[in-house]
Amino acid sequence: MKKWGRPVENVRYRFEKKIRRDRHGCHIWIGAKGLDGIGRFWLNPFLQEAPRVAWALRHGWINTGERAFPICGNVDCVNVKHLKCEYRSRLWREVVYPKKIVLDEAKYIYDELIIARAKR
Image (tube, rainbow, N blue to C red; front, side):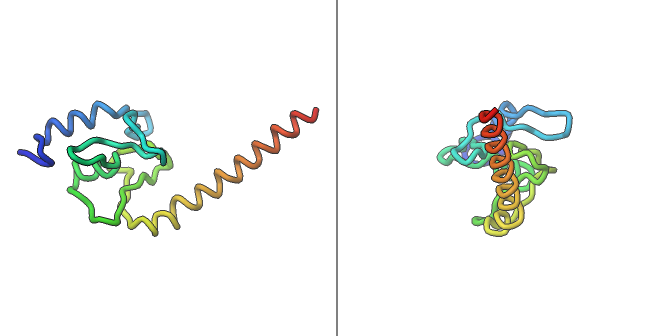
């Protein structure tokens, strides 16, 4: 059976070669990544997000405007059991933005620690 201009087995094989499984059940994407840190996978003639391709291989393509996003806390995870499909604005509000605040606070604390150590 052909899908996306190539046999599905070939696409699945190429996709699986770019994954490492860890002990927590995450499938870590080790292939190419975009500037936003999300994995990228080449499906002629388009470059697709790796979580979106993982979802498509299992369930079929998701709608335009939706995004597959890992909910396990590991941004490199492409395990379909750890992915959630939502519209981008809702994902940003509920998942990405709260993590961004936590990361910004952690960076601020780290910077303060470095300054304090430098003053010693």
